Image: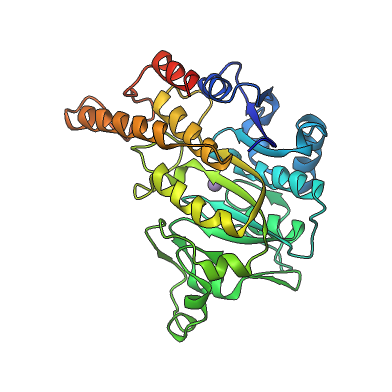
Length: 333
Ligand SMILES: [Mn+2]
């Protein structure tokens, strides 16, 4: 736990998330105000691979901080392709480089983010939040491990093919043993969905590379747990994510991680608590006490929903606690 550092990238001054994380992790969190991340939204949403890397090398990377394991917490779901640079910086620092396929990239997300239009070599010129995962694997030598509801039997059983390189795809909803079975080899439909909450199979965790980077897009969680700016997976709770992490941890050496998906202009203290709980689990800290409190708040919220006072589809919805109460609880651990 001691060699983890938290870096918060925020695009507005003094966000709820910044206040919550700095309170929950005193002395361990560094905040970086990076308004340029969303400057000219259209441009930020589509960047070349080199633009993203050089931006992060220049404005985000700090050789002192990145000597440690880094948990980066940043921005809303439209920015997920920044993980392309964050995972690269962390992997490079540990001498993990492409094209050896020597580390595992865990993509924990309600969406796969590996759908883009590609040229005949299988590569793409620009990155955005929906198309970066296969580029990340191809350029940085990572093997993808998908945690979430989206399963693509044909694509998954073939793996990524880019520039003649084949990269296997692992998934909690579609283990390798199933991918190899005759039923699936002849399965023609490109897409099917799972609940997304299955524990990854031990055999898959053993055969994928041991060094691992974790990326959590918070839309993998249900609307009871958190507010995001994308459609969410109501089957998933933060408690279940903890179980999935407990399954992964004995088989992997996690070298860094990121969490994103909570919009910077969102004021929803229950969401900040959910993120804190996920961060504590990633850092290997205890979570029982806060989980109990979290459950209590979700019950309170369910009451507000059933009486019609709160609508879970409303992104500006009221939380079952005020920020002051949350910070007090976080301060006391
Ligand atoms: Mn995503």
